[in-house]
Length: 306
Image (cartoon, rainbow, N blue to C red; front, side, top):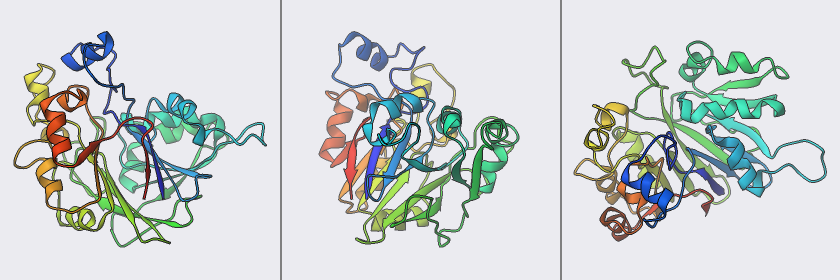
């Protein structure tokens, strides 16, 4: 199985267009050791010929153009190696890129019924895209872990939904009423080798299913949005804790580092990293602590073979 990190940043990317926090300022001026990151999206393949896009970032056009693996075959005048799309939620940062794909429709898209509801009502991207060659062909993802699915073009890989505790977007009627299907992670298993990847870019706390999947995984791509729970408050950007926004902090007794310590996973990688997170500075104490714990930081263009 092959995983390509298209975008490792959280909403707004890094640097964020209107942000002058120490990280964004340091990246623009070259005064810190770091690299830019576009907004969250990955692609997965069993054969490096056809790719399943997992979440459609607002930066998707740029991401496709940067990664030749996703370019059209040279034998066709128009086409795509993106065989299907899987959405883990209905957040702007994970769905707006669907508009970029309009010239290549129809394409199959897989999501839960709750996500479909959001994307046909309060944020009606699915409805808008029907005007391009009939739009997206939607397939429902169950919220039951044992109901696996195989996206189009992903033969040889098995996907299993993992219900995550995280927030629905502000425009969703479920914003203050979390229901199963607002947000899912994905266990992706290579049918030949039996090895698996767990992808969870937004997770507020780990339930028993999450922990069981982590324990069995060969690679975990996990929510690395904020270093501490009070990060956005400390910067004066919000009055909300990370957990209020649906994200587990990286540091602290109930953070991602402590969680990942529980499992002997070969590769532990943080993804969906907010521009305020000090781990983005590769010379920071936070970044050193990650490395000491054997945890990697995802970056755009990172390639993972499992």
